[in-house]
Image (cartoon, helix red, strand yellow):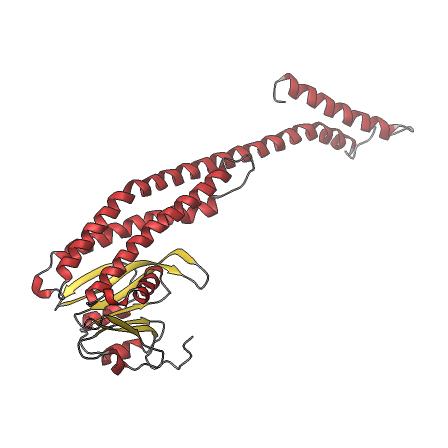
Length: 335
């Protein structure tokens, strides 16, 4: 574990790639900005924008335009891809991860890329970015240009999306087993996040696909070197994913809606059953209430007021009134 003090504000990790030697060197926490660059090398710098010093750091990095700096430090929560002055910058959607496991909560990866670097920033740890870093560790010689890293990030987003669809399908299967079980359990609180995640994922996938098509149609003079081929490949992959999971996502939406309706139906039936029991109890207790109310009146000459058996007679009337109520409810087919 690297225990050196961090010299670069917001530093999460950094790699220096040498296309000639086909190596990717991970810089330690004590690395400086000067160590990012070397002859015929490019770098990937990943930053956490929780650190308020990150904007000042970006001002010291060569090759970043003002718009690219703004894209790296923005808190916007919508996807964007811009091609300008042989740079690519914007925001990509991803899913968050915590220390123990991956989650389905959406996160945002901000990036800026040129022919010499790719810089990414985020607020929370992200699934696709971590998987991309792991692939670099396994096969460092595969990446000879910054655009190859950008392609890897988008591909990992695609794989994450497919994995989430599988996870949501399993989650719906579990909810479905519980809903159609004989036991009464309210799964609406568990179902609501699933429905929300399905809708948001499909919307953001279509947004990223539209942005990639628009970026692929930009002028060649504005694109970073090699991005035109990468953009076409990524557009094709995203179109394939969109086509493949289109029916899966809509099937999940339909299942989630039907499960929600089934839960509402079961809850309504349970509520009606409780109201029915309450009504029966009210019908049983109403005649005794009338009897006790009669004997509780503050008037003279009440029956059974004189004698030794007044209480017994009153109890007998109460029991008789309950029996009469039961007989009447049976007679009219309520019981």
